Structures are given as C-alpha cells and as structure tokens.
Image 1 (cartoon, rainbow, N blue to C red):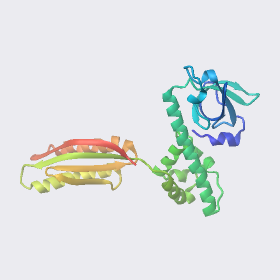
Image 2 (cartoon, helix red, strand yellow):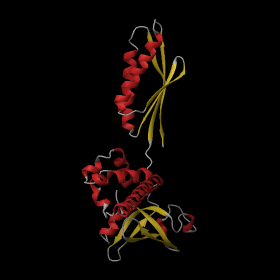
Image 3 (tube, one colour):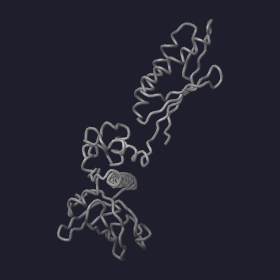
Length: 277
C-alpha cells in the first residue's frame, strides 16, 4: 500500500466505485460536507443523507472539520474530478482497520521522505528511495511494514543496489522504527534422584540452552534459578514465527528427550508468550 506517489505521478487517478478511502473533512455545510480524498488528488462530497443511518440534527455531531474519516465511494464525476461518498455504509470495524493501516502507511512514507533528505544532506546523494525500494515496498501491506522488513533483513538493500548506503539507512531507521520483541518465558522443573545430581541438572540446562540458541540463531537465551528445583528460561525474537516454529518445538523436544534419562525428572511447569517494545 503506497499513496503519495498517486498524487505526484498522476494528478487524476480516481478510486473505484465501492472503494473505501481515507478522507479529510475540509468544510461542513448544511447539506453535507466537502472532503479531501487522501491518496488521490481529488475532492469528495458527503451528502447529509449519507452521514448516518440515524437521523442527526447537526452533522457536526458525527464528524468534525479537520477529522480523518473512512468513506465509501458511491459516485464518480470525471468532469468535476470529484467523488460522492458515504460514511454510513462503512462499519465501525472497517473504519478503524482502514484508518489504522492508512496512518501506518503514511508514517512509513514520511520516514522514507525524511530519510531521502537525510542522505542528500549527509552524503550529497539525491535519490528516489520510494522508486529504489519499490521491489520491497510492493510486497508489504504498508510502507512502514516494508521498513520493518528491511530492519530485520538488511541484505534486502543489497538486492536493490543500496549496499553502499546500507549502514546509513539502517542507522537512520533504527532511530525511527521500534521493532516489537516477541518474548517467550518458561518455568522448568529439574530434579535428579541419582548421584551426581548437580552435574546432571547443569548438563540438562546446558543442553536446553544450546539447542534453543541454535534454533534462534543469536545470543539471546537466558536461564536463571528461581529456587530449586525451578529454573526460568527466557528468549526473544523480532520474528513471531521464530518463537512459534523454532523455539517452542525445540524446547518441547529437548525436554521430552531429557525426561527419558534415568534418574532425571524434568518438565515445563508453565510458559507464556508476550510482546514487548
């Protein structure tokens, strides 16, 4: 999802009839409201009878000037280069979802715009980053999602001929984008009922630690003593699929294999997943 490029590259690209679009309320009048249709260089008109399914005394009881709203395109006038829209035909869940996506996309576009200015100022290089990054941007829902993807997989910049600017781009994005950490915590009970118990316990915890580090691929595993015989294991990843598809199966398989050892009692007592920023 990209938007500002529509305004820059073509003055009159129209939305489709039935399309849900984000609009800014420019002016409210007695018979309706005049809007600016975001992402398209056109105006919109919201008739009073399309504001709400309920009777309203004052349109400002529903929308305000300057407000961003989600509307449905019901008529297109190519002569006046404007559209008529409906607010009442959009459900609350759709309004919230589309506005959330639009804001995220807009935020990404602003970061991209500011990044281009930063590179020009610091490196003396003028570059159309939106065009350069288009192979990456086109694969993600929003521009912000694409920038997160670049943070997670910096080698993507090599594939779009931005290797020389990779360090500068990543440093700048690191100040603007805060990736979510997907945390996994587990309480593990470990007991040995045979001689050499302490060594056996340490060795079993070492095995768990080693296996998870291999699965996650980085040094972010921590095992600490809560109080014998309970130990806390914690790890994280920026990718939720790493936790779900690698960490969880690995720890369960390792504990299962260790539990087969004679004289060793080991089990996952509790576990939880959470998101931290």
